[in-house]
View (tube, helix red, strand yellow):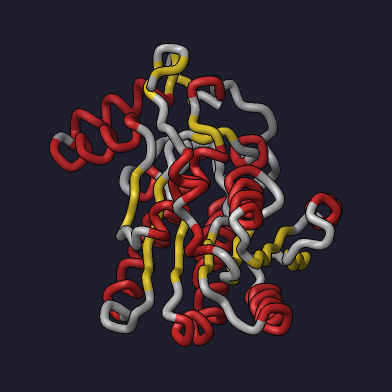
Length: 285
């Protein structure tokens, strides 16, 4: 069907065809905002036992309050810390006894030119996006192997195409996809499902929390969210792909077009990306 001149998807089947999640233990990192919060909401609605972590205790408390009496486990944790990730995964196993699905969602972006960027900005982005995925997956893997479960990485179009002003973010997503592809191949005959999903521009807090050249939160962005996929729609696509055991999915028409054109005409896409991210020679923030 079409809404406001744009093609949209009907999701009724997604909320009725996901009984596979009932009583499953689903772990979502970064579940207090954006896509992560939408995943937590939907998984609980579908009868899953859900565990999530985040750095903001108040937001996790609000989440617990909203789902009082439901099978929800939360813990304050920073995924850039190996010990925090280990503690979080151990707490999930103590609370629910196993892990069936791990969705590595926690992430952060950046907006700054390489020549202006402190190395600390890139280091922080890599620590959260790449190492957070590695730490949580590594510690959850023994349980996932026992349950023949699923490991999901929330990547980005930036994992296929380097984006100007997002060098550290692109590097982290390339790394995540390469690491998960290696893991998927290693576990190909183990019964474990490994996949990664690449949203396009999505309505979430990731742009406001993006780091600037000095590794501080950038704040407001000029991008128009009305034309973006909602976090709720993105969450439904992710869970549908988990159920169907997809290898990877690229969301939004713009995302699919970018990936394919970059394979076929990379030099032309260089020019397209420049025109999209620069106005009057300045990076669009």
